[in-house]
Amino acid sequence: MSALNLEAPVQHGTALLAAAVIVHDRDADAVLLLQRGPGAKFGQGQWDLPVGKNDTGEPVTVTAVRELREETGICVKAEDLVVAHIVHGARGVEAPTGFLTVVFAVSRWTGAPANLEPAKHAAVRWVPVTALPENFISGTGDVVRKYLSGTGTITLDGWPA
Image (cartoon, rainbow, N blue to C red; front, side):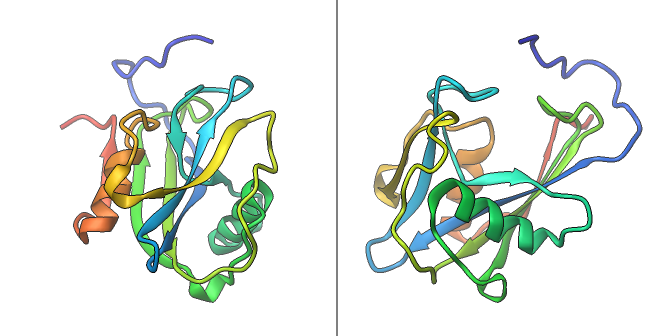
């Protein structure tokens, strides 16, 4: 896979829309994380949130609910999702014209987490907020820490200053 060139000019076009979910177990003070596996398109071995691309014609809340269920088996209601952060990237691995990720937080769910996409993920597990890993996908660790501290609502990634 070729390296991402953050020096190249920003291309014009439609940004990829994605949704990520911070599932926060407030009683255990833990968050649900995925460790990307050897078959992942990028970030092998790194930790990430459940995240995925928006399907055409699908509200971003439905994307969040669907991706969380598909990746982890955890079920949430769209009305329980709260916007925690927005990440607007100038470009990404599968988004040469940029991406917009809406990061939701939720603390009510049903089901037990499981690795339902073992070809993409090596692990799905609850991680205490006091023991977050250092090897997150670029930017994800900062988003999780900002959510937990109640700071920050938007990250601009790869845009000229």
